[in-house]
Image (tube, rainbow, N blue to C red):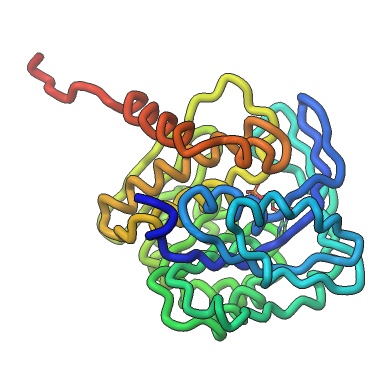
Length: 311
Ligand code: AMP
């Protein structure tokens, strides 16, 4: 399996400046955004094509690290105005981000234009952005093998009808447990997953932060734990990095069987675990393929047990 044989992955998402406070420190105006974290993770497995927008205040030179990793940034527009900024805080419960400020800036007038050369990407990830924009992307792409989307509380509250429309057009959705409960108004996650499956997607991935992730289909449930890290530094971007590992791995193998999808969930968990070890996407850019493979093997150890009850 090499990057050369992998299918391209198109991702449309936010390219942000994040300011984050955690119990261990703070970072201001660092590289962030759903599109950025996804690309940083997915680029370990497949060629990535990123579409997004930044303002004229964006330090675009900071994105060079993505180009070096083979991310095609020709779909990232720079327009007059201020960049998307997100400010968040984590207290001792690192599973729950508290949004202190969401400044849409140039995102409020953004209409994604998918470059001609990106329109046939077999794998499409609609990262966390306005569901109206996610729908606009789908009008421009040509028969992808797999379309996945993400969302968050901000859009569940403000764009619910558009989000429900989007569900009819995606194969897979990733969201965290709180978002699944908010979207479906079911407290039980099995019921929540069923509610979503009834509205379009064939796979629903519900992430539970440090408690792992479930993948639901109409007739199966798979669970992967989160990697038990000794120190979680900044949880920002874990979800997008999970998605980047998951979709990147699928694009690299082309294996969309149940077996392949289950393995991709573990790869996603591994990438999420790297993302939280440092601020911003720093750790994702440091790691090598060998680091990733070693961590995936550690997941095997984590869940291996002898099920022979007579022993
Ligand atoms: P997560 O993987 O869920 O931790 O995503 C974190 C990233 O989402 C941060 O880098 C933010 O810049 C970005 N983000 C936060 N709120 C929004 C929003 N409303 N729309 C798009 N991106 C967002």
